[in-house]
Amino acid sequence: MKFSSHTRAVLQAVLVTFLWSTSWVLIKIGLTDLPALTFAGLRYSLAFLCLLPFGLRVDARAALRDLSARQWLGLLALGLLYYAVTQGAVFVGLAYLPAMTVSFLLTLTAIVVPLFGIALLAERPTILQWGGVALFTLGAAIFFYPVAIPAGEVFGFVVVSIGVLANSLSSILGRQINHRWNLPPLVVTFVSMGIGAGALLLTGLQIENLPPLTWQHWAIIGWLAVVNTAFAFTLWNHTLRILSATESAIINNTMLVQIAILAWLFLGESFSAPKIVGMILASAGAVIVQIRLTKRKGDCRMEDDTEAPMEER
Image 1: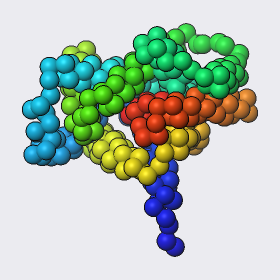
Image 2: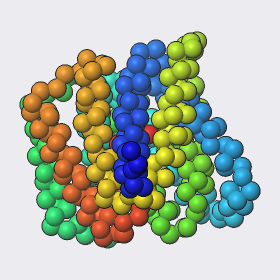
Image 3: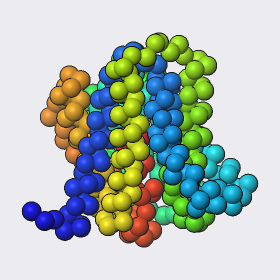
């Protein structure tokens, strides 16, 4: 059977979201033995090494030499916000909370970004966007009802909330960097990931005790770094050349349901009918907000509308 280029891109994007969703299960498994920050640092440091050959190409080196001090500071801030704080918060949050809960909380990014846009970029959400916010809020209320946070999970909620704020800020910063500075995407990813991964790893090694790593640990870290990060990001960027940002946003938001199913199958996390309804409503609300953003901003960006909400990436 021969597929059109658009159909292949859709299937490839679905594959990427599936790989990203499996990351949550693998991280939860790895966290039974590995300290969260060091685990995250090893994952992204290895992914950075996978990108190193591409970052050292002649064109990439030329772009690096041309970076101004302001651009270096911007990439430094992006790396610290997106990788060090956001991904560190996800790994720590998964040590305290169910994968389904963490993934749901991170979907808040799709709602927080427009609110930050009002304050930082003077953007004004449309009536339909506010409707999406209301729909997401309704879904969240159904998902978490009745509100009762066990004492052992409070710290996890606080950490993930910090991650949502950092993820939202990094989304807005990434929008500015990619839209206004005209830097090659490889350079943005290469530099920001290297900075964030280094900060994560150094922090983890300073404050955590790393046990001897077994081949199972390295298998999980290697798969997360090589397949679910380096390969998946490359394939996702390829699909963005064909799919609209609206299509990408819709496919990306299926991760909330994918993670719930995988957590139920492999981690024993249970979910009720109200939680399913809450997830569906929240996902629909997030998509409505993102669709409006992409229509206004142009149907060509990943960072604004598809990347930030989910990937613990």
